[in-house]
Image (cartoon, rainbow, N blue to C red; front, side, top):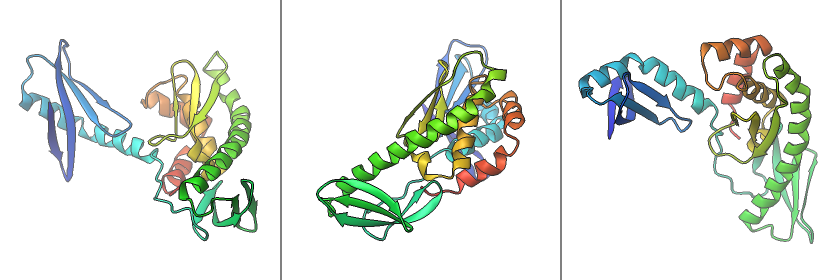
Length: 234
């Protein structure tokens, strides 16, 4: 069932389910949704009272996940439009050509295509170019940074990347680091931060105090870089 509580000026919506358990469980997911699992005999009043006590933590988790949501405004893919690459702004310039290609020159991302009036065709050409650049830079940065994990992770971490809608990166229990290809539009320092952040998840698959202590140890200026990443509109 769906319900909500009010905490100050913030409304926290949550999905409630009853289960065979002794304590209340609260989970916050990357899409900012909140799931509450309560003991069978719990009253709604008691449940809401406990959720209110955890409200600061819930909001903190939601804000954290929000900071990792790529903020992608609608693009028209026309000449003169601004696009980002490694944190710098470039103007898009479309050129009619028989073969598709992309060249970076003079403050412009020059796109060559026989379908320059087709928004989706230009988008696909750009995505292919971004992916090629991401493969180059992501692999280089990952190889430079992965030795960080040797002090707390015995296996060899692996890197994968794909387009994601809601996360800059993630780490799974099998030791795979997943990066969002959208990161190629951000400064290298931001890419480094996300890689280090996910490497730390090889030891702690959560955002506990222990996780942040490890992150602070291996990447002392992570807060400033995270703030920079949050401000980006890619």
